[in-house]
Image (tube, rainbow, N blue to C red; front, side):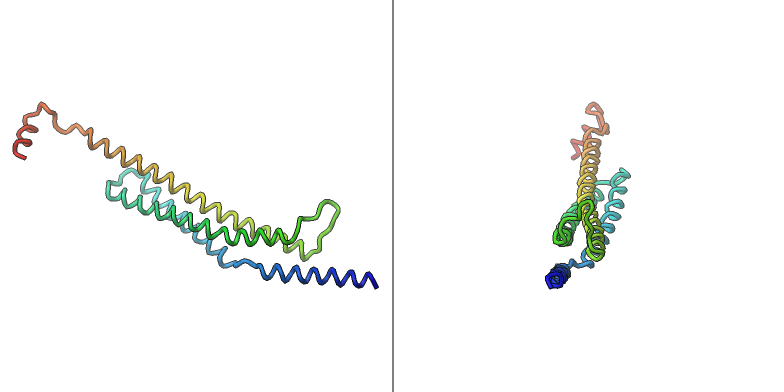
Length: 177
């Protein structure tokens, strides 16, 4: 009689655990959207960075690229925040399963499969969030390169050897002006 009661308690606990895990299920669509947006932002960043690193852009184009890089950096920050939602949901589900069994102990196949799936999803969510952080850092680095390029162009214009102070055409042009 006590063995049957024990088995029923185990099954009831398993049933309640599975209901709790299903109730806390994260939205797979959010995770896929986060991965898709991270890939899209990475492609846009690569395109902008290649134009900036080309070194042929002038002031207006550099200013436009700066705005684009700032938008990419802001989108990466928002994306990292959005990816934190599924990440925390999955992490709480893994925690809800309890610690993995230590050596010599066995886990039921259903729980082992669920743990394996949740760990795979946790890895995907973590990768998406880290990709957003990386995009943000790369955008900041591209902005720094852009700033250096603008500074270099400015200094070249200032110190451009156009006309000497000893050149009479300079003085005539000044008097005409």
